[in-house]
Length: 116
Length: 116
DNA sequence: TACCACTACATAGTATCGCTGAATAGCGGA
DNA sequence: TCCGCTATTCAGCGATACTATGTAGTGGTA
Image 1: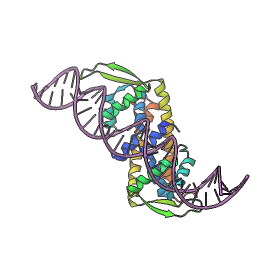
Image 2: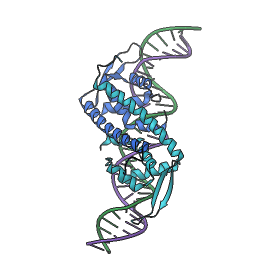
Image 3: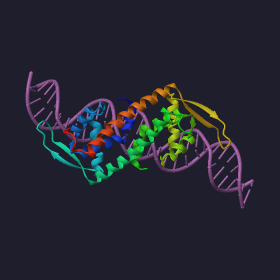
Image 4: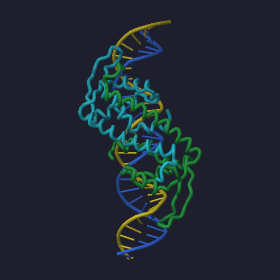
């Protein structure tokens, strides 16, 4: 999508990937492909791999090398306990933002509602 | 809130401010206070002023200087036509993201639901 | 007068994040 | 041999929010 989406993904893409890993472990190339299938058409490998390096360095995921029949070995990431806590906080932050913006949207679509 | 919120606000804060201005014109100090009242406790003047400079330079808002009884003159910002279009695109991007993440959340809270 | 608090705006510097573009590596088919 | 697909890595860039500080106007108070 556009430039707005790029900026909007900052912070949320990390949560999205952690959420994907919470469902089941996955490796970078797979995550990228899944994101693109789900409509994030502009997200390319470089973006995802850099994100995976970050969350690995922060200790949010465990990594296991798994050989592939079709190419170099895969680095399979799985969410660990710390990553789970981090994901919980992500959901809290996201819910807060979602509620605030939802409120704002109501005010705009019917600005005659309240005095404040 | 925390560091996650800081990153999440990138991109969305601009939309939030545009949405506030869509309800009614406002000046920087006022917007900052309103955001803080609404729970964005870490957002300070500097952040908002820098954002206002950006959206003014992009021609998304009209500006009017209005004298104040309590301090320096206020710069009152109001959303113009271009800003309205930009806000519409923000809502589209936001809705997309909201839907995607909502889907993801369902998969996590009941990961036994579907085969894919 | 001198000081402080509140209002109001501005800005230089920093950190983080996602994107661009390229390189590297393994495997199989034309 | 060359190409395409799989799979990972990295240097450099642009955009954004935060930190910290400075400037300015008004009014209250000791």
